[in-house]
Image 1: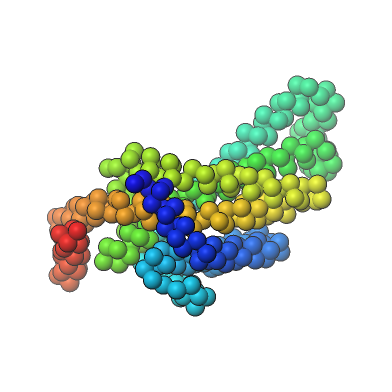
Image 2: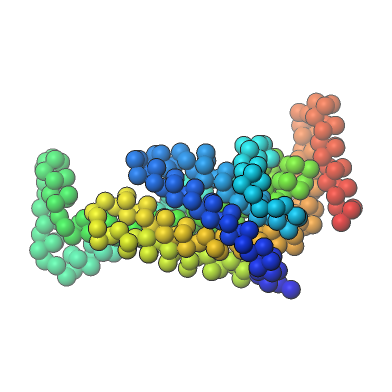
Amino acid sequence: MNIAKKAFQTYRKYLASKLAIALSFTVFVLASLAIGLFGSYLFILLVPIIILPIYICLQLANSSFAKGMPLSQRNFFAFYKVAFTPTLNGAYQVISSFLKAALIYFGFSFLVVFVMLQVYLTNDASFAQELQSITTLVANGNYQDALLAYEENATILFVSTIASLISGGFSLLAFMHFIGRNSIVPHLALSMAALPGKIAYSVHRQGLKVFKREFNGDYYRSSWLAAPIILIGFTGGVLATYFFTNNTYLILLSGFAGAFILLTPFLPYYLDVIEELFNKYKDRYLKVSINQATRVYEEIKIAQEMSEEQRKELDKLINDLKNQTEHK
């Protein structure tokens, strides 16, 4: 049975409980977006404090139903403190995911602005003259007048808004893709003698070098539906506010809200896919972790940078990993 079918069986078996915790997660996301209305920095601050820990609650609770955990708010929030332990520190690579998504945002913005301006310059002579006037003001050092002319030009504002919205949608998709792919790392961290999250992520990366093609095939065949759901939800959220406000930031937040709302029933299934991927590849990850730990051990020994206590700790880690392999 393939990954998608196994995940769907688990999803269907505990459907009511899984939908309940997914809805709880979405409520926290929407509340964070509402707080973000008072400033983008507030929403960014809430990601590591609220959204990521609640996502961890969602992932771990979603996995625990099959192990007999009953549905309750207490059980759901019991996982909150786990988010701040070394075991999950660095597991999701939130900062690097955010930076890569930001690069995608600016890259798409530049591309969309460039293409749309070329279209307008080619087909609208009056706009070409207006843009030339703004360029002349800048060249003459009249920056304040140039900025005023820029802000009052309807075409430029339209191009800027469309570029921001398109870029926002694809950068959201990219960020959620990066975090989603890394959601297998907590399973690794919690299963391999409680590895620190950063080391577990390193094991994940090294493992993909060995079986990336097969892993990607399983992953994308089972989770491809997430992308259109996110983009359709984002588009719906954008359209819900686009004709009622000129505030691009507000429209973006509405788009984010639409994406998460539409994604809600899909999230538990997606996390079941991640767990099934871990179940399939965990033995190969374990072998990678043993090889990686042994290689680091030898490098440190050669450099003579290890104390006797550190040597014993690393010996114990390698032996624990080998014992896990032998008991499979």
